[in-house]
Each structure stands twice: as structure tokens, then as C-alpha cells.
Amino acid sequence: MQKRKYLIPIFLMLVSIGILVGMKVDTVASDGDVFDNVKKFNEALTLVQKNYVDEVSTDKLTEAAIKGMLDQLDPHSTYITPEQLKRINEDFQGSFEGIGVEFDVVNDTITIVTPISGGPSEALGILAGDKIVKIDGVSSVGMSREDVPKKLRGPKGTKVTVSVYRAGMPELIDFEITRDKIPLYSVDASFMVTDEIGYVRVTRFSANTYDEFSKALGELKQSGMKKLVLDLRNNPGGYLDQAFKMASMFIERGKKIVYTKSRIPQYSEEYSSEGGEYTKIPLVVMVNDGSASASEIVSGAIQDWDRGIIVGENTFGKGLVQRQYNLSDGSAMRVTTSRYYTPSGRLIQKPYDGGEYKKMLLNPDEGENIFHDKESKDTTRPEFKTMGGRTVYGGGGITPDFIMKLDTLTEYSVQLRRLNLFLEYSNAYYDANKENLKSSYSDYINFRDNFHVSQNMLDDFKSLASVKGVAFNDEHWSRDIDFIKTSIKSILARDIWGNNGSMAVWLATDRQFEKAMQLFPEAEKLAQLR
Image 1: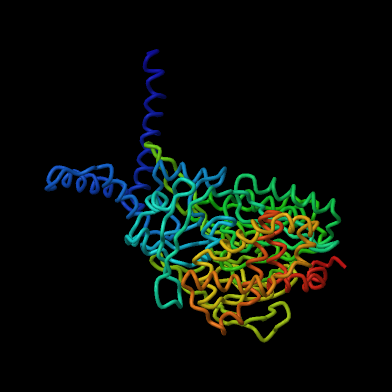
Image 2 (image 1 turned 135 degrees about the vertical axis):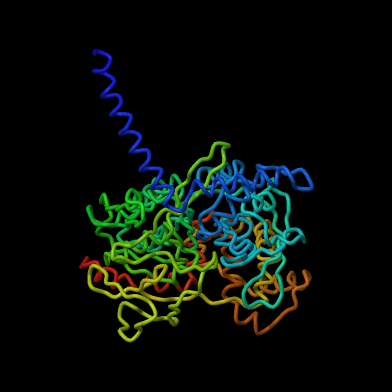
């Protein structure tokens, strides 16, 4: 009797467990017949392993199957090998040696998302959107993500030649790149532009971005900063928590910064501001088509809350959220689990089809001011309202309040950059005039305002270009003369004062920055700061 007393509840518990397990199995089976498909794959793998004419690696076949599966999903769901995972961790936590580019593989082609600030690729003029089709003369089309770094990275001082396809160019452009140590600081320039206006350039959202950014703002505040230009151009993104913390510095506590939607309830999340000490400072943010992911979260939240003015070009449109799942052999998978939305409800992700990003539908004209221009309505994209009632566009990326495109370079200047002639000439000039430059200019602001690239310098530079095989083009030279002068001058400033000196010189002729400086009255009015 005593045994029966305990057997009955145990029996009932086992029956209950069996029912629950059956329900779970039924749910899984009904959701794509996962078990049947795993069985099918196992059969196929076993047949190939037993019957293929040569010996095969089941490890490689399994990896290929995983990659093929993820390729059917979206451009950002991907398989990561153990070696690649190590490099990814380096990218966001330290430094590495290579050519200095952020890339993705779209339709089997290495596509430059952005050249890393301060790296050799940026110095040579490699641009966002360039497609690397050859590496050292060998086709790179079809190369896997994990194989690309094996070809592009390498010890400092070694060289690699990449052949680039650039839209609008009739032929491939060859770049011989000398690998270097690539610094991964997030804030690569921060200084006072005037007595009241500070400037900060953030190039990525890595593990230390918030700390670097907070430190930079603190130093600028001590220097008298009352207004801020935040430069997120060519910032490909990174860690969500760092973007959330940065946006919180400017947006009042409790206001939504970003939220995610997913078919899986636990992946639908909302992030609201924790508040910060810069919620009352007039703010202008600069973006372009190289601004992606976390950059779009920050700029989208600032725009939706009417907290500041966004200036530049439409952002990249990367609004898919990946979660990383580690596998048993040390590899990992990044699987898209949700989508990012701005506070007003705009989907950040731009359309894609079969892994290929579609052209953005909205292509505003130069100088279009969406903040004022009621006639600039675009019926091809959904409209949303900011918290202050302004119209903003959805459909992918963040459309600036004021569209300002940078000038394109002539073929002559492209050749000058490709051959690294600006660096070669400027370094030689610096070596010959180092002491005079240092003694004549007290700081980079003084240098920016008072140093002029002389006609003798231009003649010498022109001669160097000719010796290097760049045929002189008077029309192109005249059109790009400001760019040529600024390029020489900025490298000289960097040689002496680092990135702050270089950026101070560049901004003096930067049309987007010039417009940003003009828009502070609008930014103050918009955020109701006056």
C-alpha cells in the first residue's frame, strides 16, 4: 500500500511530462518540420561522405551548408569561424595590422562599408561603396568573409595590391597599400572650433566609445563649449549599448531612444534614455551614406525628439539586429532576430532583395531643407512625424534635415590619391621644413588660419605628379585646387598635431561642416533652447 501511495503521483507526473514534451515536439515539428530536415541533411551528408569520388571533409561540408542556409536569410546573418571571431573581437577592443577597411560581402563581392579613419586605405582615397574584385592580381569575387582578412591583413610594412571597381569609373583602379597598425579609438578628433562651439568626430561604436566620448565632452566643456557638432560620417556602427549611452547624454530621461520588433517576444525590446548632462546644449549631427547601425540609432533619436539638426546625406540603412550564438567548436553564428525602429516608428533597415541592397528611393536635391521645404514631399516613402510634429521619411536610413552633398573629385585628383602622392609630397616637405613649421605656428588653429600652400609648393607637387606618371589636366587641377591645397595642408597638420590638427584643416573647407555651423539658430529653436 505504501509503495502504491507514492507510485500514483509519480505516474501522474510522468504522464504530465510526457504530454508537455509531446506538445513541444509537435510545436517544433509543425514549425518547418525541423527534425525531418535535420534527418534529411544527415542522410545527404552521409551519402556524400561514403560515395564521393575523393575524400571529403565533413567539417567543411557542414560549414558550407550553414553558410548556404544563412545566405537565404538577409545580408547580415552570417557564420563566423573561430579565427574570424578572434579578429572581430580585436576590431572592437584593441588594434590590428592591415589595410584599414570595414567591409561586407554582398553578392560574392567585397564591398567597402567605410575606410577606417587614420588607416592606409583612407589615405589612398579608397571610398565607401568601392568593390574589391582582385587582390594581388587574383580575383576575389566569391571569396568568403573569413578568407578576406587572411588576404588583406598582415604585418605592418608589408604590401598588398587591390583592384577596385568604382561606380562611374570605366576601368578598375589599382591601389598598392602598405599595411599598418590600425588604431581603433572611437573618438579620433575633438577640439573647440570657436570660443563656444565644440567638435567631436566618432568613427565607430566599440567597447570604450561612451567613455572616450564622455571624456572628450568633459574636456570641451571645461574649455567653454556651449554648442556641439557631432560628426558621425563614415561611422559604420558597433555596440548598441554604446549608442544608447551616447544618445542618453543628449535626450531627457525616460524618452525612448530605440526599440526592436521581432516575431519572438523576448527579442522585442525598448530602450529609454537614462538622461545626461548635455540635454540642453544646442546640437548639430553630421551623417552620410557611410553612417550605419548605431550611428543611425543616435541620429534617428535626436531627429525624432527634435533635439538637434541632422546635416549631410542619407545614411546607410542598416537596421537589422543580430544576436551571436557560439557553437561547440569555437565558431559562431550571427542571426538576425529583430529590426531597429526610431522613436517615431521608422524602420532603419533599407530594402534588400536576395542579399542585394536596393537603391534608396528618396534622393533629395542638393541644399534641400526638409525642415522648411513643404514642397519636397516624397510620396514614394512613408511619412512619420517627430515629437514636435515635423515630417520625416521612413523606408530605410535616416534622411537629414538638411541635405548637403560633398563635391566629387576629378579623375586627376583620384589618381593623385591612389598613388599616395599627397602623403609622399607632404612628408618630404615636412622633413625639409620641420623646425620652421613648428616654430612659426603655436598651435593647429594658428596653422589653419595662417599657413598657405604657396605657388612654389604647388609647382613642386605638380612636378612630382608628372614624374609619377599622372598626366596634368589644367581643367581638373583648377576644379580641385582647394582639395589639393587642403590635402597637403592637412597632412602637414597631422604630422605635427595629430588628428585634431588634420581635422581642423579639413573642416575649414568642408561644405557639410560649414552648413552645420550655420544651423545652430535652427537647432536652438527646434529644441526650444531659446
